[in-house]
Length: 385
Image (cartoon, rainbow, N blue to C red; front, top):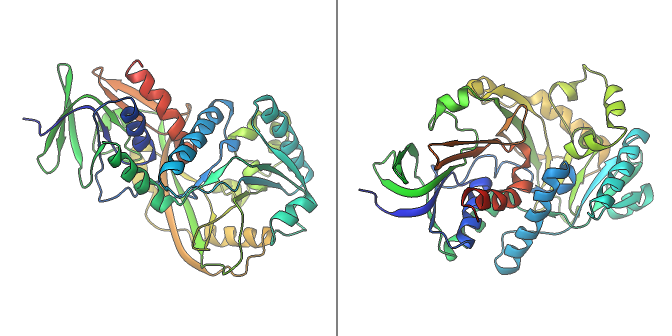
């Protein structure tokens, strides 16, 4: 016998699963989240905490802009650590300046506000930015930052207030269709039933439907990040994304000069080998998060990525960061890595089993920015709202 019946059970308490539950609850559905750990500790909390639709292609920018509105709406009612200080992309040479100018025109056509900053304006707004690095900047005033290690827990507390059940330490080991219901079986013997299941399993491909993932086009990316010790009274307003980000983010691939710019890059560079781009984001305690890198493995070979940190990558990131920004100190307080899954030739992985079991994962690096907006769309599709 099932302990409790629901309209929707979401397996996985990361940002993608949590916002599926959020939108289902807003539609009046009886919803539960089952999270295998005592708190969400995957890619959702191991990132910069930047919500930057500016970095996405046109399709996902639409979801990202909806996410911005959702984050801000929740923040107006319940503190989830949102700060609206904007994001800026800093160009270091004329090729990158051209990409900024082209992206500004794309955003103008999309009615998404962006402001082209001169070198002097960049240096004025961001003390510490090196004059010998910056040529220009593109500023997005609507964009926000959150504290990734606390944001998702705060959103979940908000959901509990709104009637969503959340069960931690609840590892799901099996889901079976039972007519028009789905049975959900946990490792500790508990059983739940639901009209529909949404599995947002991040990069855990070994527990539920492993054959589906082994035969998929999924891969996992391992990212290295670090944060400094607090910087005292020194403040960085918002997120700073730099020239390597301009050369990597999907939004810039829609710019006319992007392919020419990429063709001029050396194919054997260290940053290309490890997928490095340099980002700065200050946390509320004054520390500055730095990163990151990208190392890939197929979904069924995730163990090949290992559990070690590559200090050569960290030293490269630090060296490049110091060439871009003068912080009061570059003393490193913490180092870590995160893993997220993505599809090799599509923007997200979705498949349905027996009509009522929906697997939704592989959102890649778009999770923090795109999940809230995409989940609204997906709930509407799954439940025919």
